[in-house]
Amino acid sequence: MSVTPPIHPANRLRRTRQSAAIRAMVSENTFTASDLIWPVFVREGENVEEPVPSMPGVVRRSVDRIVEAAREAADLGIPAICLFPYTTAEKRTADCAEAWNPENLSNRATRAIKAAVPEIAIMTDVALDPYSDTGHDGFVRDGKIVNEETVEALVKQALSQAESGVDIIGPSDMMDGRIGSIRQALETADHQDVMILSYAAKYASAFYGPFRDAVGASGALKGDKKTYQMDPANSDEAMRCIARDLAEGADMVMVKPGMPYLDICRRTKQEFGVPTFAYQVSGEYAMIQAAASNGWIDGERAMVESLMAFKRAGCDGVLSYFAPAMARLLAG
Ligand code: PBG
Image (cartoon, rainbow, N blue to C red):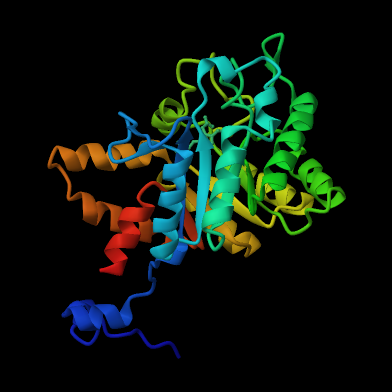
């Protein structure tokens, strides 16, 4: 015999929302500083912090300032920082050789942070776009992004990052087979503890606009990235990318962008049960900051709500430009 539950008044859902204490008691998710990975932009020079116009509140820092930022992040309980080099036009070449130069900006920043703030984990991006004269993540031959030749270069880039002391390698290029090739090279070079957080479900998105500005790639990029980044219409394909990257040796996976792809985050966690991260990308950050600076939304509440959404969707953590602001708020 089935019993129809009484709807009202026995079941008043407002009862458990009546006070802050009760709301806290029944809340299903929490956000802590340890859920954050902070993406930062590195530039040449000394003692420089240069604002990124399309990302209010975000700056490009010289290596000495990145070290200070890493110190602050670690003190706030942020477990990891993710480095992105701002590369000027002279360092961008057809062969992208700067990508595996042991003395490149990213590698110098890694060594400096490791020496001064060893407790923070360092993540780096593997893709050729900061170093290519085309702004693409891979080599372009006859108008096409070539896969195998690009993967060879990505392996060299990943190895040079591992040599500098990077803890987590983040291939964001979306070439086929790069995770397996990088994993094998790391094993062979005795870097078996270096983790791979694969940008496994990365979509060809309009929300990367401000980032390309921040790394100096927006002027350089010719065409779009649709032959390697995913079609926003697809969800099963994201699961195939994730399954493939895990099979090839990824330790953790990422969905990118974040807010428009919360369904993908949820499916990833549910179907694979692996460490799952979302990247709340530059355009998502810029939208919230722009609306807040016009007084159209409460910026702080929008930040907290948007970050909590990732936890609700099943993510273990979030890469966000809000990381220090959120961690400061949580610290009280
Ligand atoms: C480069 C890369 C991009 C981002 C991270 N790594 C841009 C792109 O693919 O064009 C975007 C991050 C952001 O928008 O915050 N491979």
